[in-house]
Every structure is written in C-alpha cells, then in structure tokens.
Length: 218
Ligand code: B1M
Image 1 (cartoon, rainbow, N blue to C red):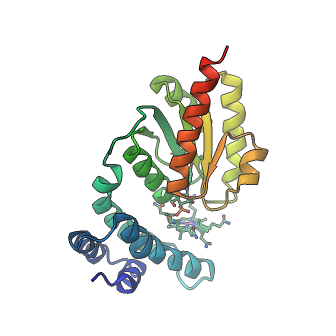
Image 2: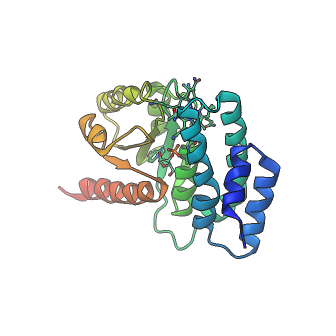
C-alpha cells in the first residue's frame, strides 16, 4: 500500500529518485493515477508552497522539491497522455506567460489535455504575446492556453488577450494558474478559465464546441 504521507515528505525534501520509485511502485500496485498524482505528488507540493510562503524554506529547497515533483510526473505522463476514445484532434498552444518560470501546473494541464485527444504545442515558460500569436498561426490552433503563477505576471494575460483580438485570429483563449480567478478571466476578456487540470480539459472541450458552432452558424 502506497504511503502517501511519506511520499509527500520525500517530495518536500527533494528526494527525486525515491519519489520516482514510489510513484512507479504505486502504479505497479494498481493505484489510480489521479490519486497518485493528487495525494502523492500535488499534496506534497502544497506543503512546499505553505512553507515557502512562511519563509521556512527558500528557492533552493523549492527547486529540489520541483525536481522531485517532475520526476514523479514523468512516471505518470504516459498514463495521463494516453488517448482513450478521444473525440477531438484540435490543437492547443500552451505557455506560461512572460516573466513567469513556473511550469509544473501548465505541464499537468497539457498532459491531461493530450490524454483527451488534443495536440499540445508547448511554448514553455516566459512566453510573450508575439510568441503565442506566431504559434497559434503556425499550428492553426483552436485554443491558446495561458498559465500564470505570480500576481506580478498574471497582469500580462490581458496584454496577450488584446494582442490576439487585434490579430483577428479565430482562437479561443483559456487561462489558469493559482492566482487567476474566474472573475479575472472574465474581466480580461478570456473565453475560459480552469481551476485545475481536469476542469481545464472540460473548458477546452466547451471552447472547441463553441468555436465550431460559431463557424458553422450563418
Ligand atoms: Co514560486 N511562487 N516563485 N517557484 N512557487 C509560488 C507561485 C508562490 C505562491 C509561493 C508562495 O509564496 N506561497 C509565490 C507567488 C506569490 C504571488 O505572486 N502572490 C511564488 C514566488 C514568490 C516565487 C518567486 C518570486 C520567488 C523568488 O524568487 N523570490 C520566484 C519567481 C520566479 C519566476 O517565475 N520569475 C519563484 C520561483 C519558483 C521556483 C523556480 C523555485 C519553482 C518553480 C519550478 C517550476 O515550476 N519548474 C516554484 C514553485 C514550485 C512554487 C510553488 C511552491 C508550487 C507551484 C506548483 O508547481 N504547484 C508555488 C506555491 C503555490 O502555488 N501554492 C509558488 C503545483 C501545481 C500542480 O499547481 O501550478 O497551481 P499549479 O497548477 C494547477 C492550477 O493552478 C491549474 O491547473 C494546475 C494543475 O491542477 N493551472 C491551470 C495552472 N495553469 C493553468 C492553465 C490553464 C488552466 C489551469 O489554462 C490554460
């Protein structure tokens, strides 16, 4: 039986090899991938966030914890991205906004969207409006997904929204990330907001349907 409390502690301590091994073992035991992700990995990262906020740990420790989180996610990746009887083949251009280097949440959203059948074009972190627009154009993307983890970088999102609207591209814009709220998404003129990876995928599906409907209506 997987010891999630121990896994959380080891992730907190940045022990990436053991976290990776425990993730493999949890899957080998037949545990649900969503539970391993949420209870084994994300729960550990939550404690890291709390202690970081309270200045009990600092950037170097958080970097090690992030490496452990990514080691676990790498094991889950094939299962999360496995396409079942997915009913979409649309493309999503995804990136973390300019000035922001956080990519764990964005990567998770991308993996789950891939599992739902979407093709993901991942622009990584620190992505400018120009880079988003060029990628949407190049890949004929149906959705542009933006992530931001800092209150100082989420304010770049409206700049991207404005630039996309000025470009005339037929693309839906979805936003998310810890400081982003549905109200903020609405205020800046984004088409959708996802609180977490699972709900983001539902939002993507709704946006694709809305885009299709607007294209076929006279
Ligand atoms: Co940063 N950091 N960090 N950090 N960091 C936060 C965000 C912070 C809340 C920590 C804290 O104080 N409690 C705080 C922000 C405060 C604020 O703005 N109000 C903070 C800070 C201050 C900083 C620095 C400024 C610290 C410094 O240098 N002094 C610095 C900034 C660097 C930069 O970006 N320019 C910094 C650096 C870092 C590290 C590099 C060390 C590391 C990032 C490593 C990496 O990502 N590769 C890091 C980390 C790991 C965190 C915390 C601890 C964890 C983030 C994470 O991965 N969570 C974070 C604390 C926290 O968030 N509570 C913190 C797990 C992940 C699964 O969740 O990313 O929320 P999350 O993603 C979720 C949802 O938000 C949503 O779905 C995901 C999956 O469920 N979602 C979307 C995300 N994107 C979406 C897009 C969508 C839809 C949903 O549609 C497109």
